[in-house]
Length: 179
Image (cartoon, rainbow, N blue to C red; front, side):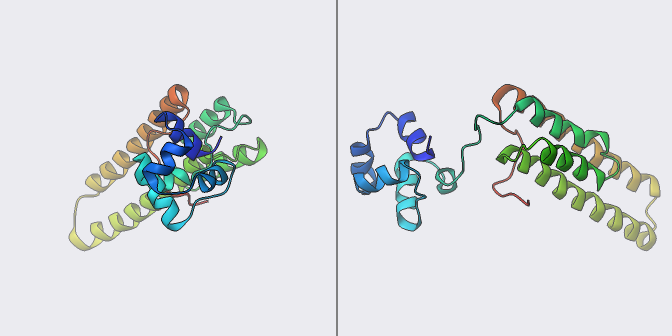
């Protein structure tokens, strides 16, 4: 099902009503609902008429039939095993994702979140070392801050797992994918 069709039906609009509301021809709406991606002005006016963000009409369906949400939860939770070893917390979910052929938007978002989190942890570790040597701040504060970051990552992983279980989506996600 196309995103345009989904959002149009959510508002109980016919193609003709959406055409009148947006100024886009019925034929163009039919082509977009058949699989053509809207671009430029058409994308903007359709999104405004449906009262949604532009990128919502461009997203691929997050719930294809071949996605196994139990596996997606496993991919998400696999990051927690190596949360203290940042590069491995990316590799294990990637390995599971590729071996089980779960290439949906959710799994890409999970891995992207861990990649970004790894960058943040490494930057905080390097910055902490610099602050410790330059400003003579007690090492205990820096270690406490790093532990807090790890605990925050664990919370994000667990919260996303709950959201995947309940609503088949992520609670914390991005509008972009790193992979």
